[in-house]
Length: 170
Image (cartoon, rainbow, N blue to C red):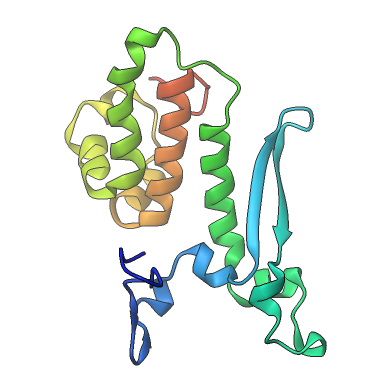
């Protein structure tokens, strides 16, 4: 949000949202909020949806969509899938290992999730493909499909940060 009174979104212009087709999940679900947590006892993330009363006060009760319809209408299933995969990483009960190793592992997080192009270069221009068993079909998808690459990056993070067997060494 902009650092000004009202904290407006930097993508809202006089003609509307400038990134509407590519808007993030938080914008797609507004004014509903999604809260998620890792439920260790069930082995998968849990989620709840909440609606602030003020945000909905202007919508007539009869015309309000239920949460499931909002999720379906706004294409949130894909976003929530990625968010849940990220939740698995950031709420993992597994240790990152000895404290001295944690700073060394942080670049993996940045490469894998914040900068897909450098991560794609890491996969294709380093020895990565010599070390890991990646099918030719998946290689083709990783070269051009950002969603496939993001999913792969999350698997890489689970492998590199926690030693989870999400990837297979050759």
